[in-house]
Image 1 (cartoon, rainbow, N blue to C red):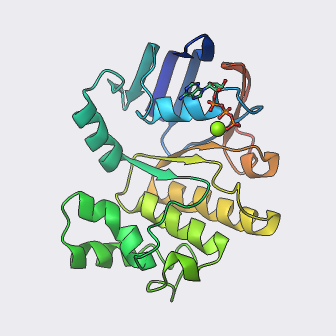
Image 2: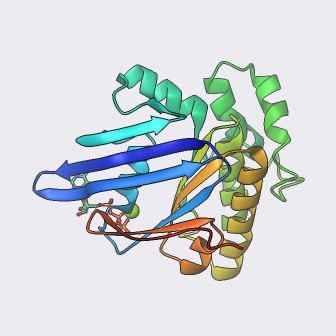
Length: 227
Ligand SMILES: Nc1ncnc2c1ncn2[C@@H]1O[C@H](COP(=O)(O)OP(=O)(O)OP(=O)(O)O)[C@@H](O)[C@H]1O
Ligand SMILES: [Mg+2]
């Protein structure tokens, strides 16, 4: 399988803090990778560096074999919008917009006319168990439903990679399991890779690989944890 996303020798320093101390990571097509580790170990920094949000001080990030860490800010932000989808812990939906328009937003930002964008957005509702909720505003959704809308929004542009930082961090155990099942399965069906940060070993167990980070270094890497 081809490598979709790779980080080679990633280093990131904040003053005297070394957040990443030379990390190598590779994500292949339809692969899902969970990043685990203690608070402050560098998990979010690694995710943000792979996603082109944080620029590394050393090393390279490659998307389908092409370097992206050295792109200019405009090219990088266009690439993030087109090729990456993002899911965060909570609070990422615009409260004044119905769910379907929240999902359509990344498409509209890409220049797709509103009607067409909303039509494309609607096709994600059934696979994510959101049928009938298209017109609800985020305040009228449960936490789990809101996260599924956020997943739909991340997938709307049909990205190469979905990045998720603690996507179940604000959910109870049962809801978390449901959301993570859908996130991993729908992302895979879409043909995208998934890179996720989580504190929860049960959540990480849904991914193909688990990478443990400690003090900015990979301390353990398990392959194909899912049979
Ligand atoms: N913008 C920043 N400025 C200064 N230091 C930072 C910044 N971002 C992260 N750090 C530091 O880098 C280290 C790694 O932070 P990071 O956010 O990657 O940790 P994390 O593993 O995601 O932690 P958590 O589980 O608490 O979210 C920490 O020591 C943190 O204080
Ligand atoms: Mg973090």
